[in-house]
Structures are given as C-alpha cells and as structure tokens.
Image 1: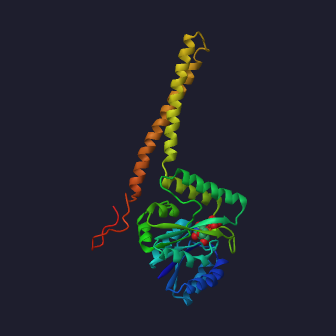
Image 2: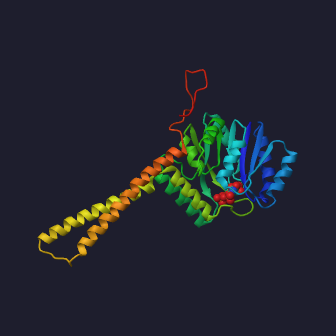
Image 3: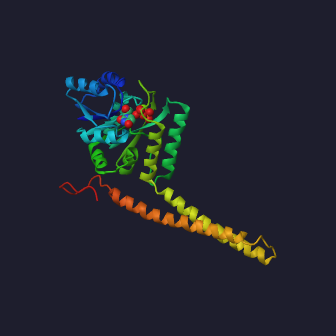
Length: 313
Ligand code: UDP
Ligand code: MG
C-alpha cells in the first residue's frame, strides 16, 4: 500500500485540482493506495469538499485538526494516520509535481529508504526565493548533522523510517532535519518546483522565521557557543588592553585618570557575564537534549538475529 500525506489549510481552490491530478497519478502507479489529508483547521470550504470526496472514495482518509496547528504538526498527524508500507509527503498546492512520485517510488525500489526532493528551480518571487535560500544556508552551515540544502518535506519514505520519525516526540519538529538526522539509505531527487496551482501561500514570513528557528534550535548549539565565544573575546580584549596600558605606562604615557581602568573593568565584567551565560546555556542545551529524548542512535537492522531487535536506544 502506498500512502500520500497532504496537509491542507484553507485550500478550497485546490481540492478539485487535487482530486483529478492525484487520482490519475496514483491509479497509474498500479498499487493499492490511500490519501491521508490533514485539514489543519481550515476556515473555508476545504472541510466540506474533502468530506464530499471521502464519501465517494474509500481510499481517502481525512484527519481534521481541532484548530490550525501549522504545517509541520499537520504532516506529523498525517504520518500517524498513514498505513502504507511506503509513505510520501506532498504539499496541497502541488508546487511539487505529483507526476514525479512514480519516478521517486522507482528510485526507492532500487534499495533506498528515503527519496527526498531537491528543488533545482523555484517559481517564486525574488525576495521569497532569497529568504528560502538564506534560511537553508543558515541552518545547514550551523547544523551538527548534514542537512541537504534546498530540500523540503516533499519525499517518499519506507514505513521503517516513518515509524522511527514518529518516535521522535519533538515539540517543535523540523521534519526535513529529523529525516536527515535519522539516516538510513537516502538519495536526493532533483526537480523543478512550480508555482502554486491555485490560491495564495499559507506560509507567512513569520511562519518561515519560526521554521528556520526550529531548524536552528533543533539541530545546532551554535547560538550558545557564540555567546561563550563573545565572552571569551571580551575577556581576552580586556587582558590585552591592560597589558598595552601597562607597557605604555612604563614608556611614560599617562592617559586621563580612571579612563583606562573603566574600560578594562567594563570589558572584563561584560566578558565574564557573557561567558557565564554561555556556560549556563550549555547546561540548558544538554537538559534540552535529554528532555527531547532523541535516541542516541538508530539501528536500521541487525543481522544474525531471528527475533525483532529493539531498534532504538
Ligand atoms: N499548510 C498547513 N497549515 C498551515 C500552513 C500551511 O497545513 O498552517 C499547508 C498548506 O495548505 C499547503 C502546505 O502546508 O498544503 C504548504 O503551504 P504553502 O504552500 O502555503 O507554503 P509555501 O509553499 O508558500 O511555503
Ligand atoms: Mg507552497
């Protein structure tokens, strides 16, 4: 069985388009399928249109969230309700062409566990394109594990990966990061990202900033390291400045009384405070890692054992 997970928020214009395009694509793939729609608290006719479709099509599942929880949460809800051995995630605006799902599935059959889309081109405004480009570069340059650039949530995964992903009970999930973090045999699939088929973006700049923030805080400790580094820098500067003053004093220079002492003391204490905040932050980061409860490693399989092994630790 092949599951397609689609989050929808106020996509009444898209539902009829989805109906024709997705049914054609999935039928042509020649295997049993289901579509799991997640209605993320839509306020327009999305709910009714999905309901009507679902009544006439038993392969359509609709999960209604009680309010708008955001894209990432909606995708997780969809994954949780999917039953397929292979699960694909796609946005409801069809910016990622569903017609390539079949080729992605073929790639998966070559022995991969995850095939994720990588956008070669985007048909979006220049400013938005730049924002996306910057957001990906910032997270990827800071992340402690390799996150693929220009890859969104559009992907096809095997059930084993989906199950592991669902075990990660993160409150602020950054799915494309978690997918990369999980490992397994992954391969990219390049494609051209089109423009939205209908309607406007449901992702505000604020949502994008939040997603970037979740990416940064979920996958890097760098902000904390920077604070500590700034503290160390300020302490080093005050020490060097003190040395410089001492030497110039010995050489006979006399700066205005009190001025040098003020600078040295201010820098020293500012540095010490920043450094202490950095240290505290390091503890907070470690507590956060523990509370988040990501497994220390993920076992994909064990050879030489008959019983099913406990795959996480
Ligand atoms: N979406 C959602 N909840 C939200 C925002 C968006 O389920 O709070 C859905 C939306 O309906 C679409 C997908 O997430 O199917 C991606 O959103 P969109 O295309 O608006 O984002 P963009 O491509 O502009 O970043
Ligand atoms: Mg979109």
